[in-house]
Length: 132
Image (cartoon, rainbow, N blue to C red; front, top):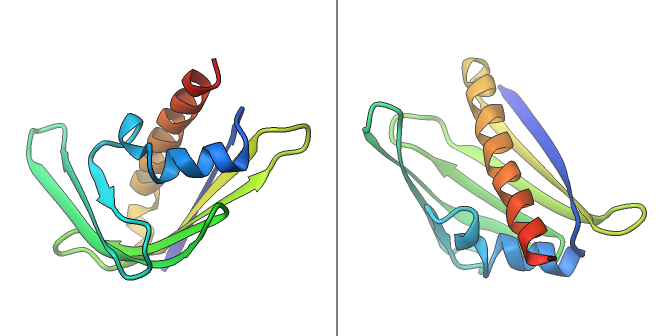
């Protein structure tokens, strides 16, 4: 099994980053729905390049505001993976977000790394807009 790790710096505080990850998530990842309680269900709907609908579902495993969000999820027919979001203060201000997804089939690592990079770039745009 493989693990993907993607990290990004944001120009906002840890508290503001946590708000973007949870309450304001719809501004940058509207296809993902969940409450921040441990055990709460989580669902993501999307369409691939061919227009086929996909869905992944799971639940929150660990929630420690404003620093840690962890969930398990899978799309039908895929192995369950575990996603761990960590938010920490950056040197000089702002915050660093690290996403680690483990339990991936080695063949899926490139696709998942690309997906997390896409989502973190959208988070960075949302964070930049929120601080202007």
